[in-house]
Each structure stands twice: as structure tokens, then as C-alpha cells.
Image 1 (tube, rainbow, N blue to C red):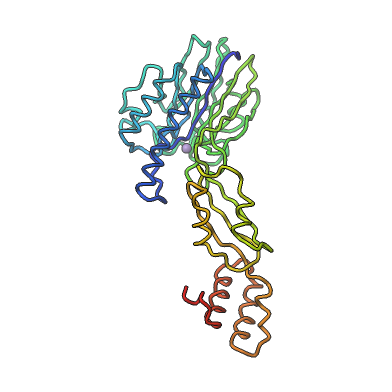
Image 2 (image 1 turned 180 degrees about the horizontal axis):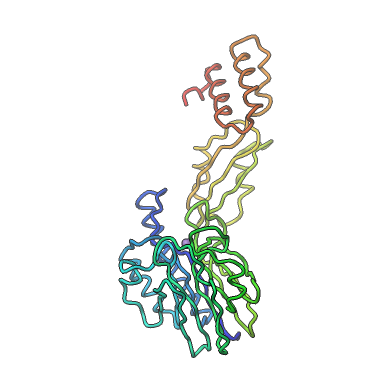
Length: 363
Ligand SMILES: [Mn+2]
């Protein structure tokens, strides 16, 4: 057993509006977000975490559903170790915030000051330093001028902030971290797992969000188990998300069947996940509606997008002394100037169909 095992999670963004979904779908997704709290608690118990750190943006905003308040107190209260929480820019501490409104279980401590504060855990010989956002913006570094005292305790940070620099979300520089004297800094704010990083003698990491909320948060999402042993730190990423957002490109060039090409490109077990499939390459216009019907049972959510380009032999009639020939000559030069312009591509498809009286004209 290491000297200290920490479970580090951030950016749950509970009660997100999910504006792109129907009200029923959005409600279901918010319910699934609450279930992540139970998964977090179960993981803390199974892995015998001694400390849980939640550096902010646990909620998406200052409004929350009563079910979420209940889920928070129930799940965090069921964790058999201290749970420390530093509010972030989305869930900043205020008298109206969920943090002031709720009666928290005894094992939960919420940092509520805009100043860096020390919270001692004598049974772990550990001191955790945290700070709350008290407004949606914060332009000072929580670690500016800070250096942990050398008093024999293990010093750990739990902060919402931005290491990418130049923002109003508590910018934290590598120099701040290097001179902090912290052994590990548990960060929140960036939604992508950072890997374990080091600045001077201080290890730091962002776990990312535990579950994606859209196609800008794709891939495996989860939390971090952090083992601190003799001043050295190791992390293990644990996937927590039951649903992932994934974007998959399928090149249809030379494929006889679009459906066959998509099926060949799919990984196994996609049924719990939300996919956007981009059809690329050169070929006839794929029939998105029938593809969607054929594939929808294999996904929790699926959207198909046609990014294919017209086949080259489509231009063969441009030498004809007809209206079609004239149209193709004009359009070919436009398409050559801007090969990725989808409007030109569509104009050719529909224009040709109209000139030839094909069924696409009805579109
Ligand atoms: Mn944030």
C-alpha cells in the first residue's frame, strides 16, 4: 500500500442544459451525469482511496435540480474517507450556490474562501491547500508567492485553474507550481486528461471530465487514482464514462457499398456510445437516410455527414454542346478553385439531376 492513495476527479458539469437534445433526452443525460457520482463513490470504496479531491466545476452553473443536490450528498457521504472540494468558475462559491445551500455530510469539506486555505488531515499526515472561485472569473494565480511550510506534513493542492496561460480562469504558471513545495497538485478546468506532469518537484495533472457532453469532448473520459509514495507520484487513469462521443471518418473511395465500408470501419461494442460518422472520399452521393436506418440500432446516438466529393468521371459530359455541357464546364472550374466547397459540390449534384430529370431534382 502506498503512503497515500488519492482519487482525483473534476469537471462533472452536473445539470448541463444539453441544449442540442430534446427535453426528454436532456433530462435522461442529466440523470446519467448524477449516476457518475455513484460510480465515483463505488470506485473510492473499491480502490480504498484515503482522500478524494474534487477541484471544481462539479456543477455546470448556479442553478441545480433537487435530485442533483440529493445525489451529491448521498454519493459523497457514502465515501468512507475525506472528500475535499474547491469550487470552479462554473460552480463558484456564493451564498446562492449549491455549496452554501446544502448541508454536507461530515466527511465533505468545501473550500469557500477566495484566498488559499490549508485543511489538515492529521490522520494522513497531510495538508490540502484549496481555494474557491467566488465569481465566474478570477485573474490571479492561487499559488502566487505561495510556498508550503516544511513541517513534516505531505502538502497537496486542490485547485481549479488554467495552466495554459493568459486566461481569466486562475492562471497557474509552471514557476508557481515549481516553487509551491506541493508534492501533488490536483487540478480541474481542462476537460482532457493531461497525463502526469511535473514542474520543479511538484507533480500535477488534470483528469479531464468524467464523461463527454458533446463532440468537442470525444474519446475515453474518466478520473485519476493517484498514489503518493516517498514523495514520488504515480497515476492511473480509470475510465468512468458509460457513454463516449466519437467521431469516425470513413473513406468511400472505390467502395461498392457505403454500408459495408462503415461496418468494416466500426469498432466492436458501439451501442452505448454517440457517434458522428463523416463520409469522405470520392463517390456517388450516399443515401444518408437509408444508412441511418440500417445503422441506428448499433448506437446510442448516430449522425451521418456527407463530406464526399463528386467522382471524376462525372465531368465527362462537359465537352457536349448542350446546356449540361455548359453547366459542367462552369461548375468544374469553380470546383477546381475551391475543391472543399460543399455548396459547389451540391450545386453540381442537384443541377445535373435537374438537367437530366433525375429523381434528385425533387430534393
Ligand atoms: Mn472550469
